[in-house]
Length: 297
Picture 1 (tube, helix red, strand yellow):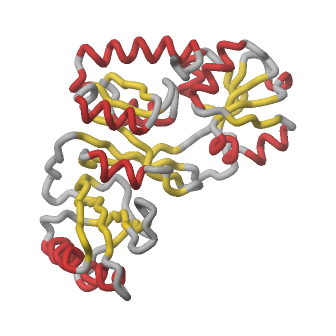
Picture 2 (spheres, one colour):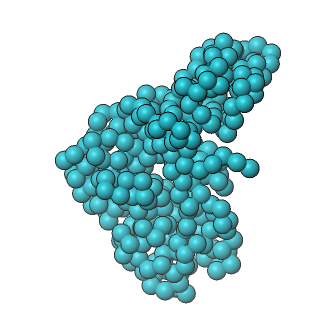
């Protein structure tokens, strides 16, 4: 049984059928049609067939199985930080990170009647939290829903003027909803970063600013992390992201997800990775890809 509202479910079935005719050209994403991940796919690959998936695991499996040539997955948000479970899913997927993309999240207040008639709005809890002050100023009650675009589909299908949704302008266009207000998020820097996943790595044009994603597990010894990362400092390699997590119920040693500026073929990065490998149990390079946005203060 589908978890999508009827209007979204019909679109999902149609998009899946079109993707099946040319899987290599399809790009998988998580969410209902009109989700911000769908927007990211359209911005990155305007001529591709977008393939909606119910979960991140489903979107990754679509690439693993060949039902899609690529997947576009959110990895972090400027307000809420790391997207849940991505640090597990990326290393386990066996896929390669081949690109990145930034989407400026402009939330819209959507509905079927008028804004004055709205009593409640539904959306993903993160989206509602990002619009908390505006919704309170309007006296509108926020009710959690599992997906922003699915919330828009639900409102469009119900046709209840008292219920609205917080979602993208794309969702309003897809489901025929009115846009009462745009940019209703409380912070003007609300941005989500996405990564592109594929079965095979891709060569980066020489001279292009690059990023490399990797993960590793430190040894359970004093100063393990300090020693492991020392090679990046001595070789002048910028670590732009470093996040720890525990796996398999063990509290003995942590695994880390990291992103650095540069490619393994760069002399300094090569030396730093050699030193990292010496001081850790294992290292996996998840992908090297063009840097879209400069990592500067």
